Length: 388
Image (tube, rainbow, N blue to C red; front, top):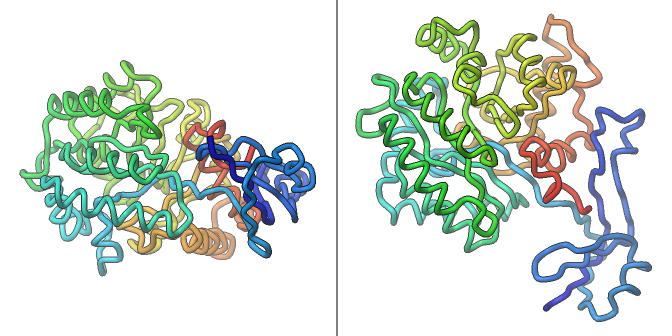
């Protein structure tokens, strides 16, 4: 067994800075620190003077002057949109029809899916992101390519077959069926879930694109596999919200659609969640569900601002998503830069009742959001997010 001692300046979060009397209480900073890595896993961390004595056989790799932080965790993106990231000038629903579905239809080809998956994971690692939860497409090849490449490159990866079957919301060639979504998801889940570092996310794309029958199948999958994740979109765009309420008139609000089908629970991760009411935030917190905050795409598509001060107030866990290709970057650092601006714009321009201090995204809070906070969003804080 190989053992390596990686030496440098260690910085990670050990708690939530929003919950601390002083932010520095959330940080662990070790100027001369060591990570002991054995067969690819961190087995111990701490001050170099203490750790190296305990592991004299370890090969020391010195990085003087370098800051070592945990790998970033991205809780919401679309790897199949890598080649259309930053496409010009449309809001969500028109953007999907103009750019997204034509690109995602190419993923019927396994060769094309393999090519994009390889580039995607290379770019994520270049940007310091080692854990990703991504949507695929309605084609099984897109999921197979994603997980195969994740295994090759050693990423912790969550993904699942996308469900969208409502007529008129996507091209006929892209839409699936309720039974096809269930059967395909079941087959892929049994093939990849908990194999190496692969985890399965049940993935109805959004209530806007799914019929009652398909969401019922998603709920059936969630009931049969409580250890799986559920990823979807929620209240991203005003036109989307209005359409969902038309499609599901028996539901009081958008979140209520997912509640109706038994999807809102721990490991339910709802992308965006911009236009949630206080009651929806409250119910999310009570269900121990999570939100994926996607500031880059929210700004790029003109969708709106996620109110993370309200999420914090109601105990809703949230993490960071670059949401490429609606977002125009695969960098967690650039996404955090946009998150800072989203917070400050709400402080300055919003006339709603708000917690201004909570909305000021300090460096400490930003590090937490991209690491331990996102790990907690995914219910994976025992595995990733810091050096413990």
